Image (tube, rainbow, N blue to C red; front, side):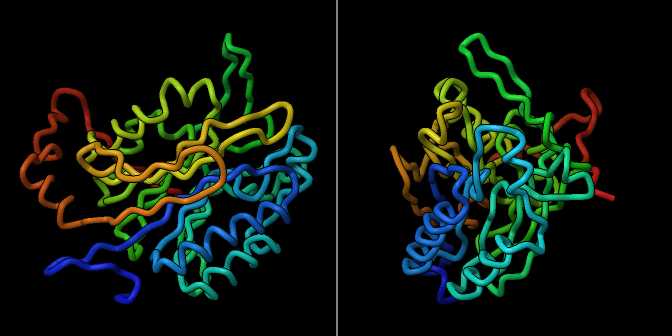
Length: 293
C-alpha cells in the first residue's frame, strides 16, 4: 500500500522491520513480545515485519518441543493472522513449529508469510537441518524431531519486493540462495537462532556473502540471549544491502531495527555488474530450483 512506503523524489523505498527476541517455552510471553514489536513497527509505517526462527517457543527438551507444536490452523497462526490484519502489515514468521501427520515424533520448521489481510501466502519448510557436535560443547540434532522440507518455494511478491525464503542453517548453502535469486528474489531472508559459537565466527560474513553473491538484500531476524540453561543464541539481527553493506543491526536484547529497501538501487547494481549473465554453467553446471511437488 502506498501509505506504507516512505519516498524520496522520484523514488519509492518500502520500509521493513527486522526483529530480535529471546524465546522461551512460555508461548504466551513470546507472543506478547512479538506482538509488541509488530505494533511498534506498524506505528512507524513498516510495510513488512520479520520475526526470527522459533518465534513461537524454544524448549530445552524434545518432548516439550513436540507437545507444544501446532498446525497451521491452530491458535498461534490465527493470532498472528489477526495481528497482521489489525496492524495492516505483512509478516515473515520465521520458524514455526508445525505439527504434521507424524507430529508425535517429528515436526516441520516452517517459515510462513502472511499478507496484511492475515492470509498465509507462502509456506517454506526448512530444508537443511542443523545437526552438529562441536568441540566447543555445542551439540544440536535438529533431525531428531524435525522433518527436512521437500523443496524450495518460489520467491513471494510482497510490498518490500520479491522475497526468497530460508531458515537459519540454510544460510550456509549458497546453491539455495542462487536458485532463489535466479527465480527473481530481490530479498533473501534467513530468520535464525544461531548459536553463540557459530554466530561469533560466521554470522555476519555469511549474510554479507549471500548479499554480494546474489546482489540481493538479505534480511536476518534473530534470537538472542539465554533461552534456558541448555541454549543461548548469538543475536545481531541485521539487514544487508546488495553491495554487502550492513544497513541495520540490533545490538543486545529484545528490539527491532528498520531499513529502506531501494529496489532501484538493486536494479542499478545488477545492470552495472551483471553477475548472473557472466555465469559459466558450461564449466560447472547450472543451479536450478526444484519446487515442492
